[in-house]
Length: 307
Length: 307
Image 1 (tube, each protein chain N blue to C red):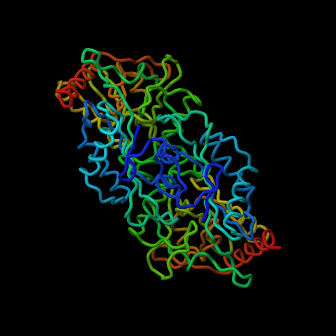
Image 2 (cartoon, helix red, strand yellow):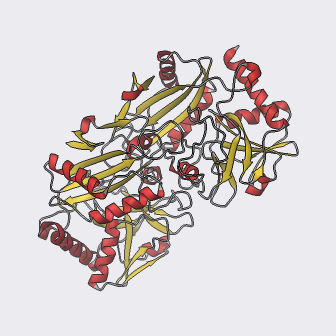
Image 3 (cartoon, helix red, strand yellow):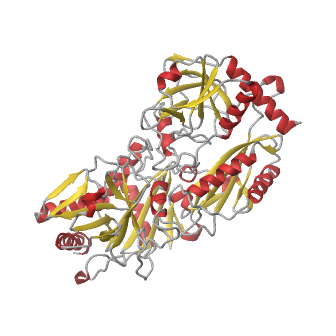
């Protein structure tokens, strides 16, 4: 596999950054994870827009155009002859003198990494989910970082908050397919996604996913007023629900609201729509609304990327 | 300059980590910054203990002994013929498959970087402060990450919270001496340290320093019950205050308490004791208690490392 680092394609095994890179020393970097379907990055414009917002939040003015960044992704996919892939784009503030206050970003570090990832979605269109089974979720103690400390809309290399949440699920457990890893083959009862609350105890999101649940035919999603990443798949799903005539509510919810749901699912670019089998001891699972949205999502991918 | 990376001494210019290293992708790493005086790492045992606590918080069981880590630091100082130096030791969880949930840490990445840093302290003992001038501080809007999201006692590569605080002080401003950078030569009125509050609005600490202030002869320090790094220099200063018979209080404080102070100073391993010239529009500065503690600190360093 070849990655794209600072303008050059290099073998993944030798793709490196300086130990003085602020991405390493401080996690001072923005990133996006994306899917390529049929050679096309799904919803590139939305990812590029979110990346801009992240960089704005970090005052990281990297000076690179969307077209430049997209070109690096394209070159990386081509070099590896990949059509269906996981794609990660990171931009760090680069190597700077050893002080915390950033200088203007004159030499950002840009990394594109890819991995083959078969088309997801429903079997009737030739795909299969990247996850082996619905998620087993657990509400954890680790709370989402509040916006006052670090804006949740910024997708950065500061990911220890989510790591601590995942570690609560059981040290060293295989957390299943994610970030391009296709996960193990065995079904396990060990939770594989952490449901995180905000510091007030309201439902926020999964460690790497947005949360949805269905009750009495209405699709509920914790509002972006909370410390919640504005997921690209989340936005697509909300749009599809509107198109399908499914009532949608975005509010502040408690864990009890999730436990009382008829259906629940998680979304991210890798998982697409992944049903939640259970949360703690409460069985949830997919259902008619989840199935309808998964079918609509699959049809959308087919339309945008394969036709 | 040579750094120590994964067991080898390498030129700083070519010292790298994989782009897949979790230290880069997630800031999933612990670190310590230290001072070497006269060839000895000041308070190594305290740094080693805090590093263990950080790694415990991250469930990062790197398997390396304190003696091993100290040996790498020693080798790096020797290779660069450094007696008085800034030393940074980082341990990341290393390269793992692309999922957020960590696997057991079988191949940590260990980096030691150093920079020459003249002995600090008072001129009568041959030193001079690494900072050019007392700190100009400002209370910022960015709040310290609460312990419920990420324990403040863990010193990790997730440092965006402090970066956002520093960015509030003025984009691209030279924030003065810190982390081994000796800073600019010009005195500026631009604040160079951000005083951060917790999410409840109580005084916490500086972006890279612990806060002290003096009122009516009593030394006050925000209590470690708040989201505050248990600084090694902070602990040394509190011990010295006890020895000197200076009354000490560790409580929860408001910004108004700082503004009403007679003296204020900041501590970290690099700065040692750095007076606060002003906070926002309030003049503070050093005074008899700050001077007494700075003298006692200097004498302690002389005793432990140079005699």
